[in-house]
Length: 116
Length: 115
Image (cartoon, rainbow over all chains, first blue to last red; front, side):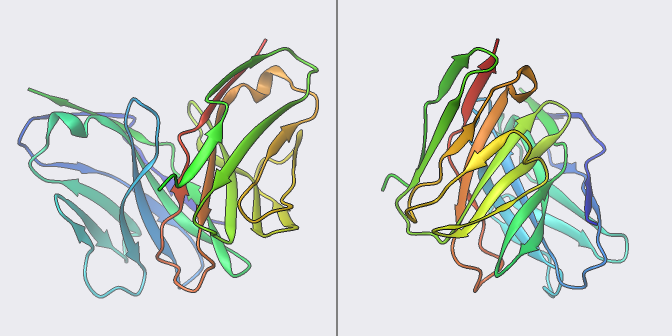
């Protein structure tokens, strides 16, 4: 069975600084995918970035990057140059195959507060 | 481009009542999902559907019923609501799994309170 662990319930970072949100996972499937979503206070779920287990390079999307360490089973999200608008809940999720598609197994999330 | 729409956004009801949460998507995505979000649990999968008339249970299906007569709609029904079903419910969709790096797209959620 899969398991996603986010050990940081809450984090603080100063504006313009970089911050790393931790995510560790456990799976016996050699092929897997990891997603990060952002949930601002307004409640919607916003997709940020994806990392596949066979991807050769760490994923990057603008100010977001993934520090993917396969041997350690970790997929930490790095946000560079934090902005006040980055204050939100952040969820790490793992793809679980369902037939020809997939569902997502989510971690419990990390609340990030960016301070001026 | 409406995307994926959930209704209602907020609902208050009483224990024992039946309530239906609606989900509509305009992308013709094959897969649709219902998740619930509770403090300390993240999001958990209730039911999913691979196509019209094909549904299957997720992690926490008890007390819920789904149907999918049309590709674009995926309603979730609580047949006899209980207080433990107070939660925020999210509907999501994704394309047929030819490319498994495609993200799921979420609706804005329905906040359901059961008194």
